[in-house]
Length: 603
Image (cartoon, rainbow, N blue to C red):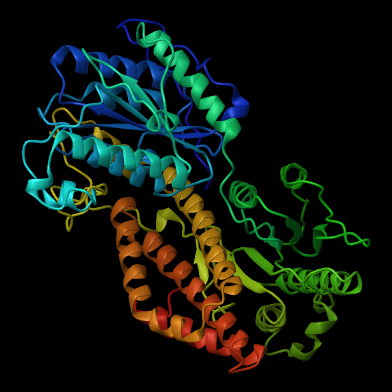
C-alpha cells in the first residue's frame, strides 16, 4: 500500500536528559519554512560550541518533517569550504537535525563567507516548494582567506579575479553583494547571528538585507528572536508560483483497481500542485470509475470561477469520499468525455462574455488502464465507432480513450500522471505526449549497498559549491540518513510524488514563459542540444540521489520531454509554419525522438 509517510516530529532539548517537547515557537499560520543554517567553523572552540548550541535551539522551534505542511531545516559548517552537509529533504525530523549539528567540528581557520552564502542559496533553490526560505548565518561575520582559489572565490566574486585582488575588504564586499542578491532577487530572508569577540555589525546599506536578533543574551533569547523574524518574513514574502491566468482541470481515475491509499496520494498531489499557482488560476475536477463520481466545473454560467479561492478548491478536494463500487471498471472514456465537454463549455462561456482566452491545462491522474467488464452501453456514445467484438471491452475502451485524448489535446495541453501499483503501459497517451510516471518503488526493491545515494561521484568537492561533501563517517550522521532513506520505500514514493508535482509545475511554467515571451522557433531548435544535455544531467542527479533509478530516471526524462513537447507545439503553431493540429503532431514527433535518446520511448 502506497501513501505519504508522516513522521511524528520530536524535539531534542539542549541539555542531556531534558524532556522531549513539541515545537511552541512558531505560529502554525506562518509555516511551512525551508531553512539553511551556516555555522562558521573557523572560530575558537568556545565560539563554535556556542554556534552549535544556538543552531540546536533554533532547530527546536521548527516542526521538521516530510509532510507538505511541515518545515525543512538543515545546516552545514564551513571554513575555506563547506563541510558537514545534509540536503533539506534528508533531514526528516528534529532528532535527525540535532544529531547532524552535534556531529560538526572545527575544520579550518579560514572563513569563506562568499562560498558559504553561495552554498546556502543553492541548497534552498533545489526542489523549491513555495515555502518561506530563510538562510541563517551564525558567525563573527569577518571573511578571511589566506590563499586564492578560482573555484571558491574567483567564480563567485566578480571583484576578485586573481590572487592580487584577494583581501579581507574585497571578500567583505563580495559577501555583501551576495547577501543583497539573495534577498532582492531570490526572495530569501537572511538572518545574521553575530557571535564571538568583536563581531561584524552590518551598517547601511547592508543592514537593510541582514536581519539580526535584538536580544543576543544566550541561545534561548536568540532562538526566540529568530522565530519572530521568521514569522515576519513569512508574512511579508510573496508566495512563489506561476502568476498567469490559467484553467487547470484534473481528471482522476478512482476505480477499485486504485487502492484507497493510492487515491489519497493522488489527491495529496493535486492539492499540493494547485497550491503552486498564486495568480488568477481556475480549477476544476472530474472523478470517474464505472461512471462519473464527481464533477467540479471550472466556471459557472456567468463566467465566474466555480471556486472563489484556492482554499475552497482544496477543501472540496479533501472532502471527496470514495464512491462504493460493485464493479472494478475504469471508464476512462467517460471521464475524458466529461472533461472535454467541460473544456468546450468553459471556452464557449469565455468567448460569449468576451473574456480573454486562458491557457487550458488538463492533468489526468490514474493507472491508465481503461477497462469495462460489463454492458457496452456504459461506454459513451462517442465510442460507438469502436464497438467491435474483437476489441470489446478493453480494446474498445483504450481506443476510445486515445481518440478523446486527441480531441482534448486540440483544445488544451494534456499531461498524464500514472499512479497505482498495477499501472498500465505507456501507450494510452504515448502518441500525444509523454507522461509523468509515478512507479511503484517496490519494483526496485534491491539497492546497491555499496552506492551512497547522496554522493555524486563525478563532482569535485573542492571545486563545486553545490557538490555533496563527504565528511568523516564516524562523525557525520549522513550515513544513517542514507540508510533510513534506502530502507524506507514509502518515503521514496512520497518524494517521487512531490518531485512529480514540482516537475509538472516547472513544465507548465516553461510552456507559459515561451507562450507569452516572443521567443521564436529558431531559438527552440537552436537550444535543443543544450536542453537534451540538461535533461540527461537532471535524470542522472535524480537517479543518484534517490537510489531508485527506474523511477527517478523516468520522472526526469519524461517531464523534460513534456516541456519540449509543449515548447515545440506552441512555437510551431504561433510561428505560423503549420496549423495547430500539425503542430501537435510535430511536437509528438519531437518528444518521441527526444525520448529515444534515453532508450525510449520511455514508459
